[in-house]
Amino acid sequence: MFIASAGSLASLVVGAALFLMVTRVTIPPFTWLALTLLLHASRSMTASAGLPCLWIAFYVAFAIGDRDIVPVPGPEYYAIVAFFATAMTLPFAADRFAISRIAGVRATLIFPMGLVAVEFLRSRFVPGGTWGSLAYTQYGYLPLMQVAALVGIWGLTFLAAWFASTFEWAWSHGFDWSLVRTPVLTCAVVLGAVVLAGAIRLGLAPTDGAAVRVATLNRPVDLFIPGEITRIAEGSVPPADHDRLHAKLARLHDWFLDGSRREARAGARIIVWPETSLLIFKEDEAAFLSRAQQLASDERVFLAMGMGTVRPGAILPLENKLVAIDPAGQIRVSYLKSHPVTGWEAGIMRVGDGRLPVISTSNSRIAAAICHDADFPEFIRQAAQGTADLLVVPVNEWKEVKTIHFQMHAFRAIETGLPVVRAAASGLSSAFDPWGRVLGVADYFAEGDRTLTVQLPVGGVRTLYARTGDLFAWLCVAGVVLAVGTALVSLKP
Image 1 (tube, rainbow, N blue to C red):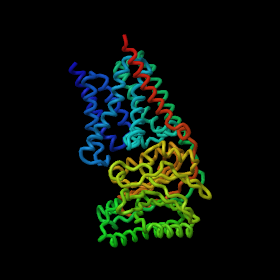
Image 2: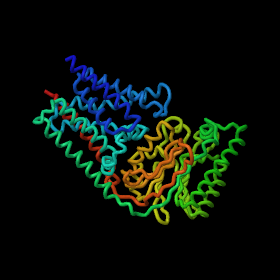
Image 3: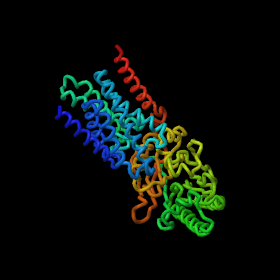
Image 4: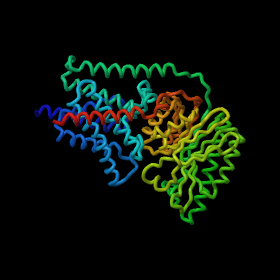
C-alpha cells in the first residue's frame, strides 16, 4: 500500500510539474504525458485523498504558471486560480465517479468528454474565452491541428485526454492485452486516422492562388514615457498636460500616416495598424480621419486602423475600435471591440454590439475583429459564415503572453478556413494561411524595423466547423452528463 501510494504521489507531482510547464511553454507531448500521470494519480488514490491532492496540485501549477498571464492583481488573482483549479478537477471527479460503473471503450471516453465540457462551458460563461484551453498546447504539430477545421479546438483537447484515459486504463490493467485490446485499438485507430487526414489536408493545400501584399505597422518605441499611454487611454489627462500630450499624439498620427504611405508605395494593398496604437482625442478624430481617407484614396490602399478614441472625463472614456477605409477613400466600418479584457480595459471601454463586420471591396471580402475578440471561436466563426476572404485582427498584448496569444490565433485560421493577419502592439505581428501555417512574424520587442510585410493568400477554404460550430463540444457536454447520470442510476438498490 505504501509503495502504491508513493507511486501515485510521484505521478501527481510529475504530472503537475509538466502541467505547469505547458501553461507557459508549448511542448505538445508534455500535455499528453501530464494528463496521463494526473489521471493515474486520481484513479489510484482514494477519492477522499486523491481529489483534494489533485486540486492542490492544480492550484499550485496555475498560481505559478499563470503569473503575469492573467491580468489581475492581488487576492483576486488567487481567487481566479482557485476557480481554474476547481474547474480542472471536475473532469477527474466525473471520471473517478463513473469509470468503475462503465466498461470498455465507453469508460475511456468519460474523462475526455468531461474535460471538453469544462473547457467549453468555461469559454462560454467566463470572460476569458478559450484562454487556458489545453488545445492550444498542441500548437506546432500541424497535422493534428487540422482537426480544428472539423470540430474546433475541442477536438484537440478530446484527443489528448482520450489518449491519457486509454493509456492509463491499460496501465492500471497491467497492460493485459486480452483486457485492454479493444479500447487501445479503438483509440489508436482514431488518432492515426486524424493525423493521417491532417497530413493529407496539408499536402493537398494549394499554393498557387491569388495573393495580396499586406503590411502591419507598429508605434514608435520611444515616443511615450512608461504609463503615459495608459493615462491617455483612461482619460486621465490633467489640463496642464493637454498641450504636451496633444503634440505627442500629433507626432504619433504622422508616424502612422507616413508609414502607411511608405508601405503602400512599396506595394502593400492592405495595411493594418495594431489595437489602440493610434490614440486620439475625440475632438481631433474627424480631421485625422479626413487625412487617412485622402491617403487611402491617393495610394489606392485598404487601411484597417486600430484606433483608441478618448473622451477625457467620460464614464467610459475609450472607444477601442477598428476603422476601415477602402481604396476609394470611403470609411466602410467603425467597429467597436466586442470582448473587453476583464479588469482595467473593461472598466474604461465602450463595448460593441457583438457583430463581426465583413467588408466588401472590389476584389475581396475582409472580416475584422480586435484582439480578445479572436479568443472566442464562435464569434470569429461569423467571418466564415459571412463568406469572408481574409481576417484582420489588430492586437495589443504584453510580453508575457505574446507567444501564447500568437499561437491561439493560428487555430482561428484553421477553424474558419481563412487567412489571418494580426498587427500586434507589444507582441508578435503575424500572418497565417488557412491551414495555420505561419507566413511571417515581426516581434515588437526585437531590435530593428517592426514592420511586417507578407504575401497573404486571398480566399478561404470551406470547413465543417464553420458550418456546425460547437456541436461536438455540446455532444461532449451531453455525453458526460449521460455517463454520470448512468452511474448515479446504477447506485440505486
